[in-house]
Image 1 (cartoon, one colour):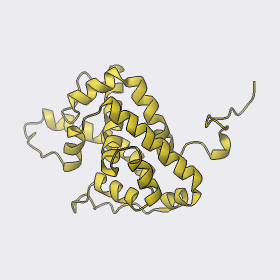
Image 2 (tube, one colour):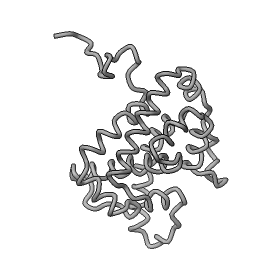
Image 3 (cartoon, one colour):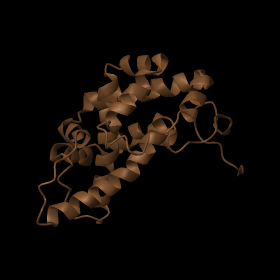
Image 4 (tube, helix red, strand yellow):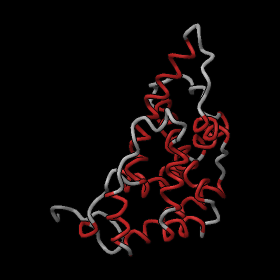
Length: 196
């Protein structure tokens, strides 16, 4: 499974992480250590300039994948990491960085934005998780943000929700497979199944 599919799995894992952290926070033994991925995501600060760079990187990656179908095939054929890799100290961020850096064209598209590959990966995870919890709070499904979400990033997303959602759309589309290229028109818009 490729980088994009791994990020989709991260969304599901993030939900589980938030539930686990909420339970740990209310339990008497809440002294559990935050893993290094969670610490790095919490420490990362979202800003408008970084959001602009992220958009450039994501669009660049999409173009590379469109122009190089062999890379898209390679990503889709990449094997999953072993289930016990986290127990051996290999974290999702490290694996994703290695995966992107193993493909020079994709890595160059990210770096051309001004972000490092690691910044791009951390920002991807941070955006997905923060957008998710802000959405849950907006919908009244949670009253407060979990402790593993940076209050500064939550406030940033609250004030820039539409822009962040727009910037994340291409990445989310890639994560869930998106529409086949032939199902899109020249502007990249989804073609309608039935013309009106």
